[in-house]
Amino acid sequence: MTAVLPATGPTTVAAVDLDRTLIYSASAAGTTEGLQVVEHLDGAPLSSATPASWELLAELSRRAVLVPVTTRTEAQYGRVRLPVVPRYALCGNGGVLLADGVRDPDWDAWAATTAAEAAPLPELLAPLEAVAGEPWVRTVRAAEGLFGYLVAHSRDGIPEDWLAATTDAATAAGATLSVQGRKVYVVPAGLSKAAGLLRLRRLLAGEGPAPRLLCAGDSLLDAPMLLAADAAVRPAHGELHEQGWTGARVAVTDATGAAAGEEIVRWLLARA
Image 1 (cartoon, helix red, strand yellow):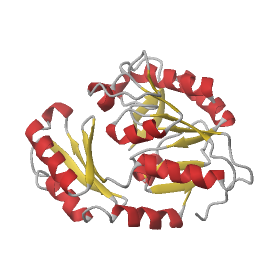
Image 2 (cartoon, one colour):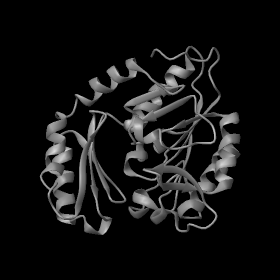
Image 3 (cartoon, one colour):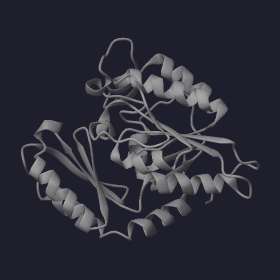
Image 4 (cartoon, helix red, strand yellow):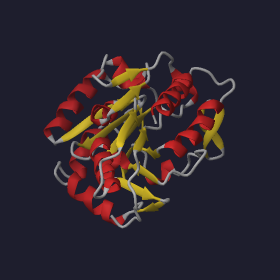
């Protein structure tokens, strides 16, 4: 890791997923009233959060090492305007480390080696590209040269039989399939948020004790990270909630939508 590490390891790391955990599209927020826009795309508002969650997030960053952990690419993450610039951020489902906003090349090498344990990227993309011309599909893309995803026009438009077959194909290829709203991700199994976060925690610890780990997330791709945490929280919505998923050290919010995002930040802040 080429990034400069602190001389003394932190006592707490707060790792937070972004979409549908901390920030919300208009359809996922539950309301548009009183929300603060935190992301624009082509000049149009794309994601929002409650103003209180943004203020509390700044306080959380003073009490712990705040690490956004997202499936977003580096470019997509760069659109989000957080109240502080986190010292570290994990993009590409743990495959990209940004340290003070600069991409770490040593981390890129580790991610490439890890992703190579699954089938080659063209094979992972094949089930997605096979339906790219279907009317329910908006686009199919590769992310950071590590994994692929499909964006549908709506979640209801994604055929369940195609999802089942693609899940089987992903598993056979050594990958994980996750549905997040209208997006379908196929990611090498070894390239996970949990693997990236635990690697970062070891590096931050240096020769000292590992920092306490607090995590928040809503999707299947977040589940291993939540289970690896000393304490974790998930919203009462999203992929994990729909499956009734929980863990021994995983709390669940009372609220849903953007209000759950604020509840999550308060929960983390109380334990930082």
